[in-house]
Length: 444
Image (tube, rainbow, N blue to C red; front, side):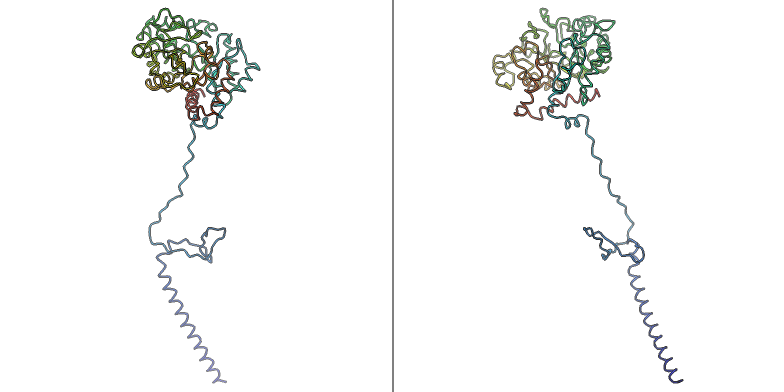
């Protein structure tokens, strides 16, 4: 019994000895491996005990068996995820160039008058503005009875153009061309010639300021004034005392001062009548007028007040329905077949002349504002061209605003059809609409 116990004890001791040896061997091996990785573990992601590293394998499955590579010792660098740059907001002009339909863009080119003696918005006016989204409206004396009536009328008209404001315009030169003077206690402002003959340039600025204040109080934002023509022909009655003087030197400072007086007080000024209506024998309201002299004379006289107005940052220039036969050899090729005879005989109206609009006014004079036709219902044009012809000819020559066609629906439809036929493209249309929107951004 004792011998058996002793053998059993010996066996137990041997087993214990072997277990100690195994334990020591395991501990030494583990210490070695830990020593090899200790310098790198600080750069690894620490995980909760019992959890393996995870990576996304490009599918919806999470792989829990991937190994995390060892990283070299270095100071951690933090590179936050860059914030995406916010989309650049479109400018007012670019936004509306994208938003407006073809018909709305073409509508912006038109400025119309109201029916005779219309003093409030009626069904006929509503229908016209629903069918043709015009860009502007001009009022005349027959549309004006009192300050409150005009304010209401203009407000109602603007409410019919919810997407963009209307140009609300008027011919308020002062003197004998005054559509509004009768509703103000002091009456019309003085004529241009009276102001010019006074020699008081500051007075011209003050009159421009008074005109702007009157127009703004009623709701207007554009005035077809001042006249930049030189009254060099005493027999000329269409201009006469609407001009500031008989020489360029007399006219220039008063044109600039009047433009600044109006525009510094919130109303767009428009020079007229380019390239000069002061030395014609005819009145373009009733027939085509002629300017019978060449380039040297134009540079010395007619051009200079317009250049002064452009240098004063005038907003618009109105084209005259006058022919310039002495410039026939300088005119660009006719834009349409119906203009060929007018080009060949030198009678092409300046309104339809890319030479006068693009080459001289925009090119040489550097004007990039609004080019506006004189009224297309004047007999110089309406006796010789239909509504579609006059709208297309003026627009393709470079005009931005088509004023008062006889029948605006005919003119509008002709423009839409011409676009679809490829007569003009989106780039040409956007050129004018961009200028119109640039001006209207100021109104907003």
